Image (cartoon, rainbow, N blue to C red):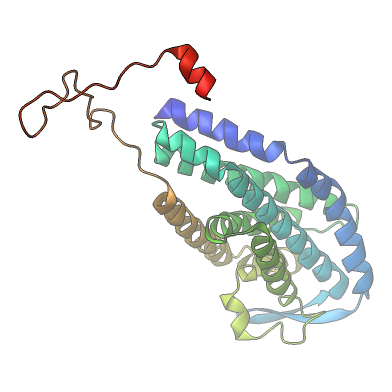
Length: 286
């Protein structure tokens, strides 16, 4: 089991690393998205942001808050895309592995581990790129928030990858969910951003955690726990569907061995054997 798990983790990570398009998006898309969104909502005006976990309202810099939202949007898109593409590309290979005797539990654990590793790496990268546009006081809270959001959307990408039939439907769902989820949390672009309904969206926890740590110097552990709960819910749902759709390998001992002596016919006479056809004749007939 341990050897299968190690091999499956290496295969899962290798499949994500070989995704050249994802590397291009990671290197280019994240800084460009910071630049575009920061310039579109770039006014350094003060806005009121509601920290619902503490019941307080803080006045924050609108431009800086928008950069946090832009970072959340870019990494959620990237992590969900990469995991979704990896799951879709490897699904037939995974079926062959299970049919050949590979444990489904090893494959499921490997995909979960690879998705979490990718989420941590992408979240850390997005936090480092943010330093070129803004030097926040609580950078570590933003980095943790980015990792939490990336982990949630990595699990969501896994769930969508095992649910939808085609790639187009999956890409559409990821784009729409990520854009809707992250930008409605920002009061600069959404006047309804401080409403209670936002608590039921996946990026609510990371947004609150980053804003509280950066603008109010507070560590909201409850928001981190809420984000982890979203991650666990998406991951468990996706892994359950994946397990149900995996084939069941036929045990070797259960396969009936062919008999050396063919059964007799109904009248007790031995069955007729098919006449041997010379090889040359069979080739000519073909």
